Length: 364
Ligand code: SF4
Ligand code: F3S
Image (cartoon, rainbow, N blue to C red):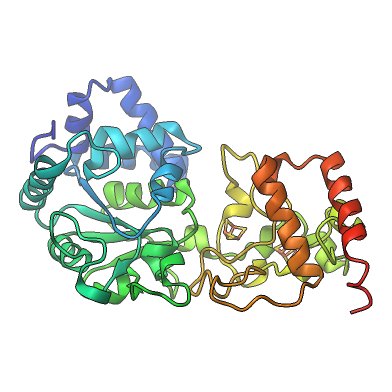
């Protein structure tokens, strides 16, 4: 938009008014974010001074814009600013000021100008049913995706929906939703799954391509190992209780209030690879298991059908048991005050009313 085609990253930053002093700070920050030794700050600085700016085109399909929301709440505002504002974004439907024909023309111009250089970020799943779900400018989502991917340097699928189909793909999958890597097979596709994706995993991956010009090391599901090599269970703060065999049996029971392991409540932490237990959310404030909610496996394929204790909307209602009634109690508490806002008085009230309402559970 305000950049020149052949700008290096440094020149692009200077056009934005970034001083040399701030540029050096950014280099140090980036080296840290990329997990590089401080001795390699000079190499990062050199790369930013000489590497061509690699712009981002960010497409949204069947999504809730939660990953965009997540990245704009990055724990590291300088890195987020660098990635989102100073260097990269050429087209982003939620964040850009332009709309309609003007926006579509800007995208076409960016794809032409930066042919083979741009990073395509995709948020949301791609529907193939009916040829008409999720059209933009009169064109189907998969057509738009294939066109933009054709001349991209690499494709980054953010969130579970773009990675594996996500919630739109849940049974009965009315739109025949797909993840990007099932449709784009001739380009490197990097998955940053999660619901939403963790902001640092998104910014770091984009910065990695931008600065080092390379694709980070990936696992078998195309996820960067830096963020997805360990399970949630590996880093969980309740792990000691798991190892000691201490579990919550229902939401609000004594074990729950004592912070015991949530495995018996459907926690998918042992089979879910993500970094939320380490990086957390909202500037390191908390994460689902810390807030009292079992992991749903939001960074794995088959989320949501395979995740935790929730039932699909199409499933017949089952006879209540401790888990589903407890889940309903928790959902009510979430709506009332937010998971993180559960205080001990509320938990005691929930436990009391649960006991009062479920005399037959133990008998069942
Ligand atoms: Fe593992 Fe879940 Fe228990 Fe944490 S709460 S220790 S992730 S099973
Ligand atoms: Fe997702 Fe489980 Fe973490 S639901 S945010 S991977 S705790």
